[in-house]
Length: 229
Image (cartoon, rainbow, N blue to C red; front, side):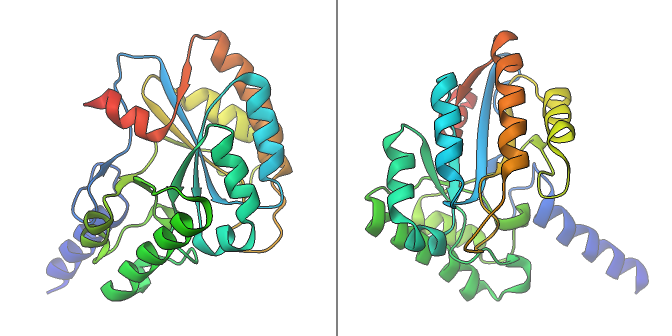
């Protein structure tokens, strides 16, 4: 019996967090390994600091994908529209940023669809890309994504920018970035009204120049998905 429980736990872990798993949500975690493309992605916005990220990205001519929470879009629709107007991609990051594995399937679907409606209503765009909070998938997510026409996006590099100083975030990204990579950082702090992402901002400023000098071209998550096909 213990062995059976162990196998069940391993299967749940694989389905929930393994980058290559397609069980609880069709999607991708990287692009082609033979092209010097990188997708820079930010989760948990829009926040009070998102405009600082937009200014920095504009200075370098870099486009990114912002996975936004419905509750944050409802709080700051103007910043969400500014993000879209600056040429960045908007993705769905659920409504309230829960750990989906703790929710029943109907609540998982509600989190996805509610965020999708808020984004459509407030900024006039229908996302095609989705990222699960904490990168954890759950039962009920796959049919929710299929119903909304969303692809799940995981990552090859995560900056751990909620706990590391700026120099270590930058070091981590520069060390792990590679052709077809997807970098996960944050411009917000779940659905808290105020976020301090100054360390992430400093890290992004430290990585953009070196990566561009190495010949990388930054693309959105949907462009990376298209390049993969």
